[in-house]
Length: 264
View (cartoon, helix red, strand yellow):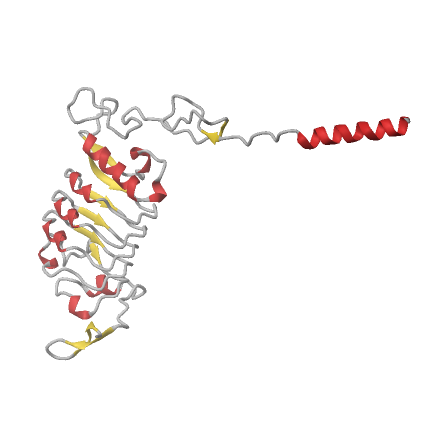
């Protein structure tokens, strides 16, 4: 009898155990109601909370109570801040960062306007058309990224003096670059360029300086783009270690020069 009672007890407890409802899975999310991405349904915080900055709110709107076009907290131009936000919006690698966080050292402002923009080694894949709003910009460094094209809007940066686009995946440069009348330094080394704009030699670069401030080596340029203003060293590389890849160039031109133009 005792044995039967023990068996029945074990059976009852076993059934009760099997019929107990499973604990609900936690809902992960930000549980701080002061954060931009607060999730009222979350039951377990996952450290994903994002917060507004003193110069830009949760809706990415520049905080400009004075309505003078400059952020109240730091005096930086709201239009410049918005361009940096556009860089973030179109480059997934920058997701989750705030505009001023993406700036590399040597970036700088003058009287609240961005005059030096350094965004090197960011794995950028795109440049926003709104870059034209950086109309006080004098130095632009976008080297060592993954850019495949440059927007025509770059030609609106008429105050630009220094342009660094080395070590990307560019195949062409927009003709609008010819509008950069103050440009004195141009670095296009180690891309995949197959052409250069006609009229390039009209830029205000000291093409024949003893220490040139331009270079086009390490691309795929045929000789028809080796304009008279471009020195051999800046075309082939300082030590010939970054030559043009002319494997797809055929003879052409008025005298049938070798490696003159792209093969059909």
